[in-house]
Length: 454
Ligand SMILES: NC(=O)c1ccc[n+]([C@@H]2O[C@H](COP(=O)([O-])OP(=O)(O)OC[C@H]3O[C@@H](n4cnc5c(N)ncnc54)[C@H](O)[C@@H]3O)[C@@H](O)[C@H]2O)c1
Image (cartoon, rainbow, N blue to C red):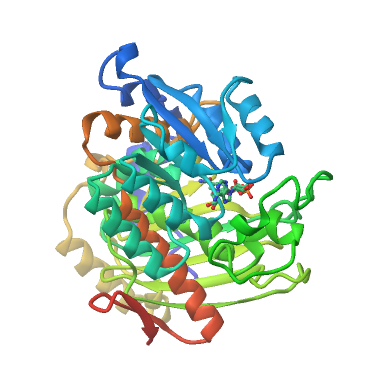
């Protein structure tokens, strides 16, 4: 679009000799993991936890737990024996007891809480058994494998009065805390449009994980892995690449959408599922027998804004959330955050008037300037500046998320990403998949607690 070659705005900037909005500073945010502990933790106040599911994420958690004050891993549990050694290595304790059956852990009186990092279809049973056994629960995201699972888990947590954290760790990130501060300050104006994506372009990013050479019906408990899912012959591809299959995971919805939705819900203080969702996408490249698409794009309607999400396993676009407001734009890109104000100072219309004869144009501009005498160009002050933030090298939002959970276990004050929050973002994944597989608008019916065709 052609613009007036020298707008009033540019004139003002040149006239004042100050272009404040171009100032860019890179701020490194300070970690706060220690602040999640309200006081020094006495040995008698140490929280003893057990890790159930010690695969990729479970081992990440065990490593991160070493940075969290006042906790101790007292048991690890996994269906696959080689994960026991991996867990002991991750927590740097070869002597920590390891088992296959999580129920033996729930029987232990010295276990205060459990960290569930199993395949998604296993979450509900372990979560509910843990609550019934009086344990507080950190459950990996997505909290639920089905809508029904989620509401049952919420009810169970409430019934047994348990502290719960769901594991989209960005909710505890210092970067997201800063983003929320900016959003809440009103500097973005009204935000009606939010756009997020998470794109990866590698077999590992598409869950084509190698099958360990020792995997066999002897080294792992195949029937317990299946759980309530349909019975099948031993198939290590299903065990190690479970995210590809509807019986155990939710594809890109449960893997990545849930992180993006958790970030959006946290920053906008939303604690309800979207009203409806529409999805498109397809399986274009990874045609390896999987049941989920390798590209999915979903448009969500929330009461006061719209959210578009995309996950594409065929391009390495990284992770992004953009908030587009009437007064500014805020972008989270991987581990950076930027805020850019919109220049909303009044200026005369400078496009269509170039289709007018000069005399008319001058008349309009003269009238406009008479009607807008202030501020005088030299007094104009741009009080908003571009802001950039990043996290320090090696920062772990997983350690912060754990610290917030253990803080809740001590204080009995719930975390932000509790069972209700986690259920709502999980419903967002289920809405996306319902719309994709049924080729329809997926509508959320809050009274029936069900997804229906919209
Ligand atoms: N928050 C994050 O950034 C993040 C990252 C990765 C995975 N996750 C989540 O963590 C969970 C695990 O994912 P993963 O990549 O570690 O999967 P994984 O396959 O590497 O590990 C899952 C482990 O759970 C074990 N398991 C399953 N059922 C069990 C049971 N009944 N008792 C004991 N162990 C059991 C399996 O043996 C397996 O080793 C999933 O819910 C996933 O969505 C979260």
